[in-house]
Image (cartoon, rainbow, N blue to C red; front, top):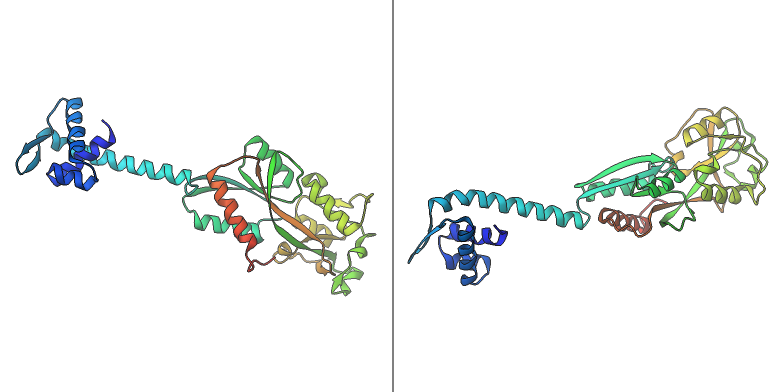
Length: 300
């Protein structure tokens, strides 16, 4: 049985008339009549009693009607799912955030995507930029928020903007008396920060911006994420810098934040995905991310 045969059968059965059934389907009556004759031949039974007033169902036709309605409903549902999936309105998207990008523009993009596409199953993970690079190559995630530049020809990047860094000082440090800190004031200070291998491109970019050209002294202490970095500064291990957005929610006794003097050092924010990947849900996310990043109302 073909779906078009079942549609013709249901239309004629509900209208109890071949001409009206054909008009309902916007088809020629001979075409509808032929589809039903073919269906009757395939099933080996007569489905309609035809008369001058129209057509009435036989016992076999009556038995087929509910089955046909259910099959057509399931076919329509399946077609809707397939179309929605192909358009990126349904399906799955595996996203990973960097540890320093759980809020801000990254959080806004993920929240907006979930609100706009509730039928997409979003699998959210957390990791470092270089872990994301490995996971993208391994096919374990579809897209990741990263700290650019990645300098990886196998990946594509969408730059979302740059976010200011703030200085993190122990509460008794001499620089806490200043309302703004010049980057050069930190060049002789012991530095606490995340390991270079977590995001080499951004790590070198920020160190050059704040500490000048290499060679740089080794870190006084390496910590994997912002909470441990700020805790280490509070303990007196050195000074550091974290994202402005993160500093607004991360408060640890013994650590003090100060904005940098202009020009403030910044760190980039980007989305990365496998080059050439045209996953429909990914395209939806990229379109939304570009829209949010370009919004003049976004707090940068």
